[in-house]
Image 1 (cartoon, one colour):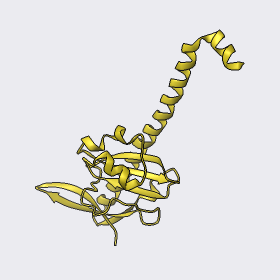
Image 2 (image 1 turned 135 degrees about the horizontal axis):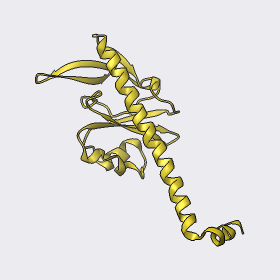
Image 3 (image 1 turned 30 degrees about the vertical axis):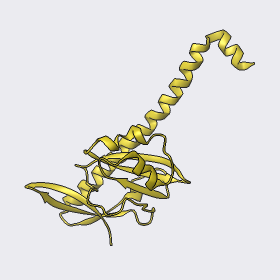
Image 4 (image 1 turned 45 degrees about the vertical axis):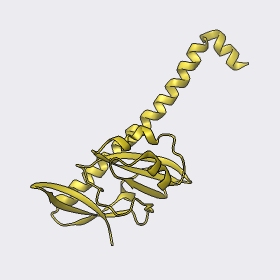
Amino acid sequence: MKSSLFREAYGTNSLVLVIILLIVSCSDVTEQENREFAERFREEVNSITSRGADSVLRIDGLTSFEWDSLFIFKPYTAIADVESQIGFKWSDAETTLINQSDDFNLLVFIADRKVVAFSRVPRNYGDFSKLESRGPFTVQNSRFKVKNELVGDQPWVFLYVTD
């Protein structure tokens, strides 16, 4: 009855517009959280490297949401490989563009067998490309050694699993 009144008063197109706006606004929140996480990541890595010594980055200290598993994917990882590693089909995997890009690492956070967040972390913020394992990393073991290295004659920051 209420939906009929809404359609009479505002039309079907208005209802569709409201639904689209709700979906888009939810997506914007996720994208904003992704950018905020990447910025916190960059700031923490910069803080660690400015101290001049190799130190440890704790991913759990950078997140503002609950998660229990973290997977890290290198550039050009196939979507099928992402889904195989996380153990289920992820409808938004293709929107990350990890399979088409070489300028970021994809961090995927899982809770209760669903993706609760992901972040495209630019490789120049800190590069996970030398990791042997993609995960899963738990909240307790999501610690990575931050190391300054030279790539040719350019300084670059790589992250490694801690011992």
